[in-house]
Amino acid sequence: MKKMIAASILAGDFGHFAEEARRAELAGADWLHLDIMDGHFVPNISFGPGVAAAVKKNTRLPLDVHLMITHPQNYLEAFIKAGAASISVHIEAEHPVNETLGRIRKAGLRAGLAINPETPIESLASVDWKLVDIVLCMTVHPGFGGQAFLDDVLTKVRELARRRDAEKRPYDIEVDGGINNETARRAAQAGANVMVAGTSLFSRQDMKQAVEEMRRAIA
Ligand code: DX5
Ligand code: ZN
Image 1 (tube, rainbow, N blue to C red):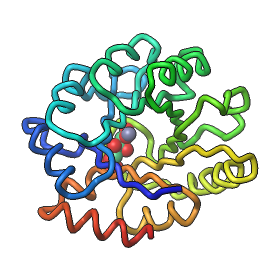
Image 2 (cartoon, protein in one colour):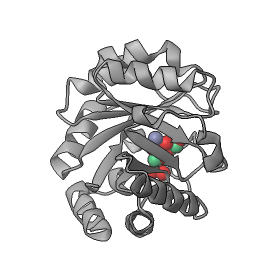
Image 3 (cartoon, protein in one colour):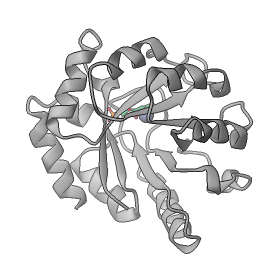
Image 4 (cartoon, helix red, strand yellow):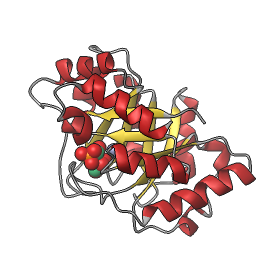
């Protein structure tokens, strides 16, 4: 699987998202990750489809939308219209999971399934894998940027990677939360191929160098 770096704008300057998106693009990030929080599924509110649409106008990077919201099925159209390239929904949220994934796919986007750190892999038993392009493993408890990487999640990443290969399901395995050069290297070793990085990229003066370093770490 192709290794990719998704810059999470949650760690960017909220007053200057257009510039932050351009900074990530010029730095060589592959995707721009948008964390959508509703203050209900997670104890924080970030931004919505209007902001996503505004960001879209300022970058050519594919928008990787991560919905941390209780009823993602009610907001798909809004994010599709905003120009998302992929939408990930949580297995723990309240929605008909396969139907939601199918709707994302039908709109021509890539469909992602996100899973919290404490959620066991068995909870994915009824997922229709034909509909899954991305499995997003949370490596922190969702809600806030800048948290420490939860090492235990690597066991789940390894098992997912094993199943992906054994059952020939060509989905991306994305890790999100606490990703820096060292945790990215370990996640890649475990089988993850998409690294979501917020703080470790946006806090750096020279983001291009930060992206290059991370690419070397996961090569
Ligand atoms: C948590 C978010 C974060 C974020 C990444 O809900 O999903 O994981 O984008 O932020 P950092 O890289 O700061 O942990
Ligand atoms: Zn995210």
